[in-house]
Image (cartoon, rainbow, N blue to C red; front, top):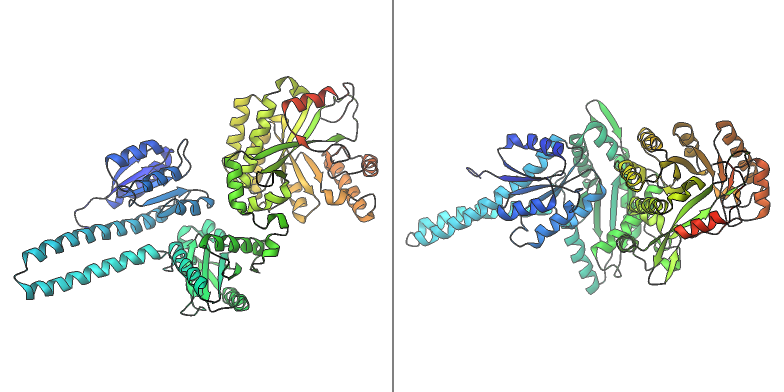
Length: 615
C-alpha cells in the first residue's frame, strides 16, 4: 500500500507496556495513538479510525473484552482488527469469542509483536488495495468502453489480480499464519456444516482434540520463535499421517483438532495411536537443545445428538481433561458416563452454571469449627474455622457441595475466581467484627494450586486487608493438592509475600500423594492437615491408624500443629487426643453452617472463657 501510513492504536493502562510496544512498532513506519483506558480508547477510535488496535485485556473499569464488544457492535468500527495483549492463556478463547483477530502474550516479545502485527497489516494492505482496485476498475470501464479489445484484455489482467487478492484474503481469514493449517473459525464452519448434513442423512465421523503436553516448556525456555517453529513442525508431522479428506486445524495455543469423516470411534482411536507413534519418534531441536514431545488426545464420536460446534468442544475438553489427568501422552475416548457420574448432573452445562453463579452471586460461604484436642496451659482459647464453598442451584432449589462443582471449575479455569470470591467474603466477615479479632485464631480459606499461579493475587489480598483493617494473622490459606504446583520457587515466593502480611498456610490433604512430602519440605507451611481418608475409619482400619500415627510423629518432629479432618465419631476423637493431635474437624464436633457475623458472636458467647488451647 505505497504512500499509505497505517495508524495503530495502543490501549494499555501500564506505561511500561506502552513504551515497549511503541519501541517495537517504531521501525515499521506506523503512526501511533495511545490510550490508557477503555473509554479513552473508544473516544479516540470514534474520532479517527485506526487501522489496527493493540488492546490490553486486564484494565481497571472497562476491560479489553468490553472495549472489543463495543467496537464490534458499531458497524463503522467492526472491521478494525483487534490484537489482544494478555498474560493469561485462559483469555485467548474469550478474546476470539468477542471478535478479536489475534493475541500477543505477555511478557511482550518483540519478534512475536512484529510477526502478528505484520500479519494484520498485510491483511489491511490487501483490503485497501482491493478497494482501490475496485474503484479503479469501475472508472476505467466507463472510460474505455469504446476501446473494447484493449479494455477487455486489461480487465482480464486486473480481474485476475483481484481474484488473487480475494483468494489471499480468504486464505488469511481461514488459516493460522504460524502453521498454515485451518484456524478455529474455519473449523467451526466445517463442523457446523457437517452437523447439519448429519441431521439430514446418516453418517459417522470422529473429532480429535490434540494438546501438546510440553509446549509451554519449549515456549518459556527457548522463546516464542522456537514455540512457533515447534507448532509448525508439529503440524507438518501430524498432517503427514492424515487422509486428504481429513480436516486439520489449529485451535490456538498448543491445541489442534482433526475431523475425520466416515470414521468409527475405533478408527479414531487408531488414528490417535498412529499420531502418538510419529510424535514419539520426533525430536524437536533448537539451538543445540533437544526436546522429546508427547500429546494428550481426546476422541469424540460425532453423533446426531450433537447440534453445535460449542457442544462438541465441551465434550472434547471434558475428554482432554481426563486424558491429562491420566498422564503425558494419554488417549481418552469421550464417555458420557464418566463425564456425568451423578444422574443429577447429566444435563448441567457447568461452564454456564459457574459463569452465572459468579455473575449472579449464587455462591455461599459456610463455616465449620475446629475442635481443640490438646490444651496448652497459658494459651487463650481462640476460635478456628474453615470456610467451605457452596453453590446455590436455582433449578433444583438446593445447595450443591464442592464435590459437584470444584472439578468443573478447575477444568474451565474458573476456580481462581471462586477462590477470590471466598477470600473476599472471609475478609468482609472479619471486618464486621473488629471487637472479636482477639478471640479468633484464624479463618481458613482453601486455595487451589491453580490459584497460586495468579501473579496478581498477593497484591489483591494485601489491598483487601489494607482497606478492611483486618489483620493478616486471622487468615490461613489451605493449599490443596488438586493439581501439581508446577513451580515450587514461585509458589514459595507467593507464600512468603503473604506470610510477611501475617497470613498463614496449611498443607491440606497431607498424605494423599508423594507431592505432599515435597511441598512440606520445600514450602513454608505453618501447619499440616491430615487427609480425611485416613482419619475417617482409623478406629476400624489398623493401616490408616498407623498412617495417622506416623503423620502425627512427623508433625511433632517438624514442630508444626496438626489438624485431623473428617472426625465423625467419639472413638476417632479419643484416638486423636491420645496421639497428641492438636485439632479435630468433622461432624463429630460441628456441622457446617452459613457464616455470618451473628453466628461468630454466638459461637464465641457460648465458648468457655477460661479454657485454653493452641492459637
